[in-house]
Length: 252
Image 1 (cartoon, rainbow, N blue to C red):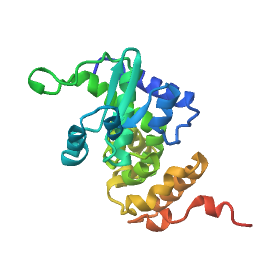
Image 2: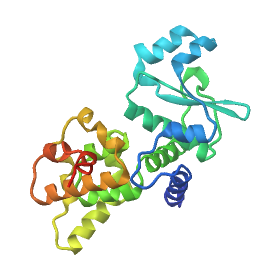
Image 3: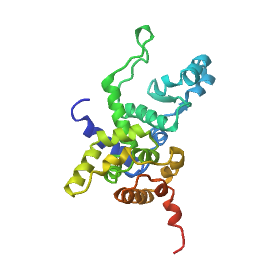
């Protein structure tokens, strides 16, 4: 990627989040941004009613569902994002954020296929869209807060609606993991960030409620997890089974 892109993209992601009224700890929902920019987002299966070849749609969504996740169609000055409804919500969040990033970065559209039917690919353009997508989905401040308490990536992924791999990538490539480790060394504490892939956590389905928490309640969860990590916990099942919204509504 070109020199200075990372800093520019971080600023852009922050501006976009602010436009949507999102704080650094809030979950970013790509359809919300698409709606704000007037870009329709539809499953590719809906295109059959518009004349798309049914066998081609079947190939992409059933036979070889891994080969296509999302794409942007340019029609004059209009845009349309189509996605593969057979993919998981976490994969689609990244795919839709990726497509929206192309639009935000004003990347020039190109043909999907080149000579011989092979897919065309601009590595630098795709890398830029990947980077901005990660920044939109997980703010650097949020990644740093997770790294500071040694939060397992799977827990952060459940909060922000992304894959564990993307949560790990964002924490590492944003420099959040290095900063958290440096802060711990200066304070004479062990580098808790290394626990992120070691602690046992509930399966993703049991942590889905984390995505519905307010920023305040999410910070309470972070503090609980941080205390457990500092206390030498080997798993976070008990910590993550206590919904802070319930506790905060109990009578004194």
